[in-house]
Image 1 (tube, rainbow, N blue to C red):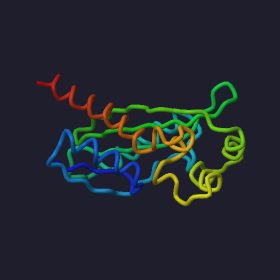
Image 2: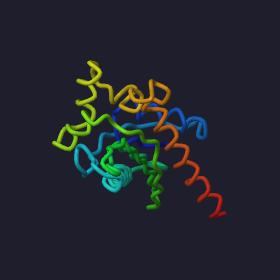
Image 3: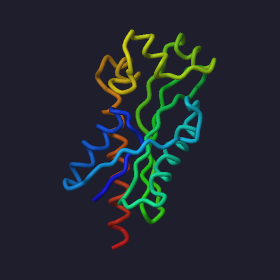
Image 4: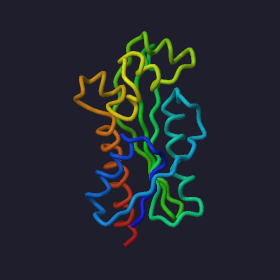
Length: 174
């Protein structure tokens, strides 16, 4: 089984590989950087979800794979508070697309202000934490949950939701 991953991000790749390997121990993985076709910083659940779908679908164009995974992180504002949001999509070689969303936590207002002004969360978090490439490691969710939930953990949960839907659909077709 060949699984395509629509990013080179380490946290996302780790999530796809660790969860998929449980259910598909003979799987091979290919990372292919594909654009989300949404803003660099998605600002809503809808835009973040669409970015994940776009990545997954692009992977499957003329692809020889069982499915492609698109994962997208973004933010959404609810009642004046900005939250992290995350979406995943699994696109199959027969055109099916499954989606799932993950955990979210509120962001400090000092970060939300910068995002509203057009900044991207990853670089803002690098400055906030005085670290480099935080999006490849614990991510903002790791910072704001005291490392109880890291970015790869959050995307692992999304992978479980995606694979569960995919496997159920295969079962229902039989």
